[in-house]
Length: 151
Image 1 (spheres, rainbow, N blue to C red):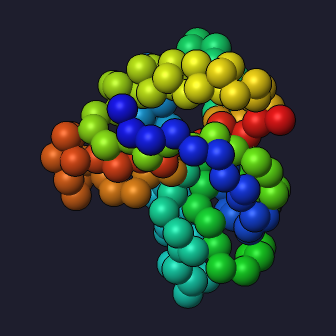
Image 2: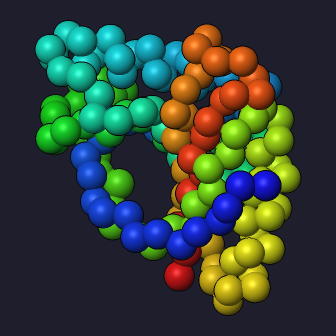
């Protein structure tokens, strides 16, 4: 298990798509969302301000409420399903996970135990920021920053 830390996150602008999907449709929903936003950024002549993320607003596997997005350097206009928004400043518990996505449930379990020990409660979305992708790295080398907003 990687180290778990408490960190202050500053507000930053994003372009994002909010949608609902099932667990079975998650991979396609994420891929489609990333592609649409990346294409739109290219159309605008802009580059992402950081790696892509997915925020999870619930854990109902048959009806996941997710936000798919990219940070941007400065606020940009949305278009259609792509919305301009901000990730608000917050305190988060974070863990850099190295390895397959299938291990996320174990990582989240460790993070929940850490929060309980430190008398913290989750508030809001859970964020997964993908620092590389399965197309760029073997499964054992995938890097994902997992953050949970807390109070």
